[in-house]
Image (cartoon, rainbow over all chains, first blue to last red; front, side, top):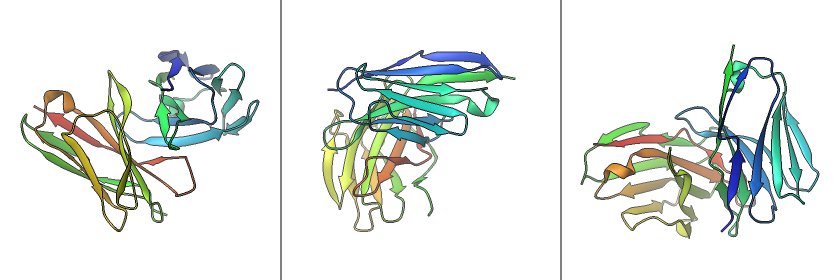
Length: 110
Length: 112
């Protein structure tokens, strides 16, 4: 089965700093999905990447997909306290459903 | 459109009891999936229902069951609760031709 490894597991940054979260797959990536979760709440869909080299942005969050490395990175520019939460990557598996990584806990200190 | 709704939001049960959780998907979505999220195991897939039929199933014991109604609303049942069943249970729906899942706020279950 496909496994997704996220790094780092947790991250504490000062407001205004840039940061990157990585998601590496054990198998070929056909579609990579990024979600954000506030503690104890549901997941909010951020963006979907489907082609190698694809890059998408949503406000100050940019995600890229590197097919050859079977990896996706999520980059936040000028972080704000509102960016705090758990970021999860998900990948398509057989049956067109998603399997998820363990998540990266982001804390942004004001 | 209204998002995915789940009821109840919080639940406290004791070992041995059973519990039923409810999920209403986004209007027009026929696929409903259930996930269990715990600090140690992360987000784990329980099962998916489509048009009242279970389409996929994760690796959970038979104590976990579900069903879907003709209006696409879904329920999940856990019988003979164990302490380890304490978790956030998330429901997600997606359109017939899509892969992106849209999640509800979850039901936090505490088993004492």
